[in-house]
Amino acid sequence: MNFFVATTTFSDMFKKSFLNNFEQNSSPLEFVLALAVAFLLGIGIYFVYRRCYYGVVYDHSFNISLVVMTILVAVIIVTISSNIALSLGMVGALSIVRYRTAVKSPMDLMFLFWAITTGIAVGANYFYIAGISFLFVAATFFILKSAKGDTTTYMLIINMENRPETEEHIYRALHKQRCKVRSKIIKQDKVELSMEVRLKRNNLSITDSLQEISGVKDVTLVQYRGSYEA
Image (tube, rainbow, N blue to C red; front, side, top):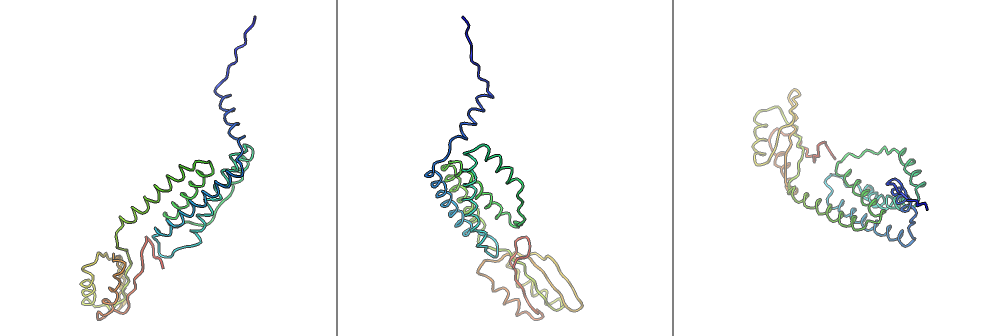
């Protein structure tokens, strides 16, 4: 009497588990639920971005794209999780896509990554991961923003006559402010002085006091974020 012992290798177990996972198609109700959760979390990211935006000009179209991106990424993950052949084809198709829009702010890049990560978690039906991570990241943004304080960095550009007493009066007017001289350009009898100064958001009257100094032609105050922004 012969006995046959069936042996199952780790490779066979992995293939069987992998194929079984892909054979589980999402029902229409589960798909609608994923879209609803992605929409709600995307709206949450929208309001966090609007509240914590740190730049000069708020881009509403970019903020809307965060909500849409969260939903679309969730749709992609739900789609590729139901069919192994489709998932391989979609990965290959998406790998050749190139986006030419430059993201200048690191903060905007973090919000894009946050929207993509949330969409992936929702599409994979890990709603609790998406929800908990949303609350944690949102709290992190608000805490770090409150730690910044109520001061804002500006670039102060002063055009004046080339007179030592005029420059001395300017430094006296700014002695209570945290300022650094960035450049000084002398052209014959004119001087352009560029300074980095930190002011409170509602304390912009410094330009009026500088304009009253004898010898000062004009004063320009520009908000500064590592580069000039207007």
